[in-house]
Length: 165
Image 1 (cartoon, rainbow, N blue to C red):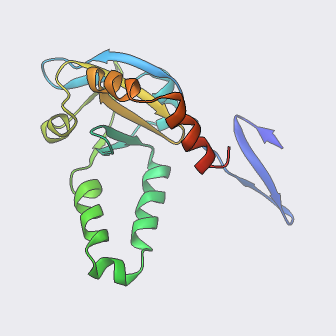
Image 2 (image 1 turned 90 degrees about the vertical axis):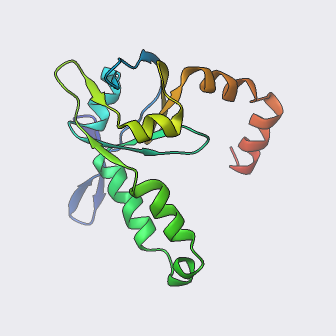
């Protein structure tokens, strides 16, 4: 059953809503001299009025809605204590949470990216916003092109096999 763009599932005598953003597409933008960048309007619709930017993988930034941010926090907090002792959770905390920023687009749809996040991702001027299903990623445009140039058909096929697609 679907209504209002959300997915609903009947559970017993109640209906539960599971609204999940589907962030797709690639958008090219430019960071202004003050460190602001326009978030694509489609992404703003799915991310909401307030969302989170943090360090991602491969030198990009992850952009997460509050719902996805909460899911990430819950997963990390639910990790076994032995992982904390081994330092894995602490390392993850340092990478994801300590450098994160809560952002709110202005009337022009721009967000201010903190300097430390721009430095981490090598963002200076031209950037690519990339939809990655439940999150967006923000890349330096040249790094994004290089990342894609490394993707061969064999690598894509191998990844699809691992995911059983």
